[in-house]
Length: 184
Image (tube, rainbow, N blue to C red):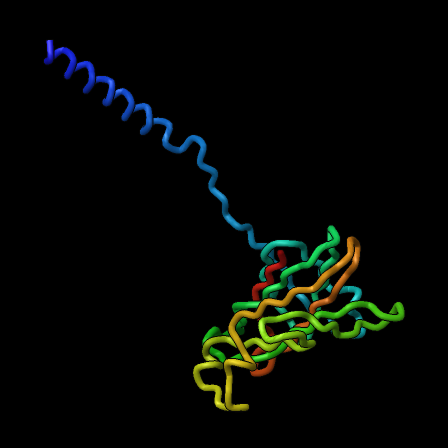
């Protein structure tokens, strides 16, 4: 009698194990962040022709040392903007440093720098660099307070309001640079 009970219990366990193995993937959702790509070649006087970016992650390649991308807020809220992974596409070991400014349209034709909130307070200049630059950087003394490999800023926008994110990088051999832009 005990042997039959044991066989039945083992059979039930085996059926359940088979069932779980068969349906292991059901209910799981694989989420992969889709990174969009954008190339800029816009100078200051043509900021309205800057490529548009949306919420999410965008890999931006700049054809010039200085250019813009624009973002139009889909809803009224505080947006978190992260600039990271700065590099020279022609030579990834090249030392690069630069800055970003977030700008709004004023008087219908000028894009003025806005103060954005960062880890160290409010500023108009968000300084970034790659790790090759930081490894050898001695200027200004304390590099922790100046350049970082990833910088995040927050700004409150109304629905439909547009901002322009200006990037400028020094130390680029090909006058091209690239970075990752993340907007939440």
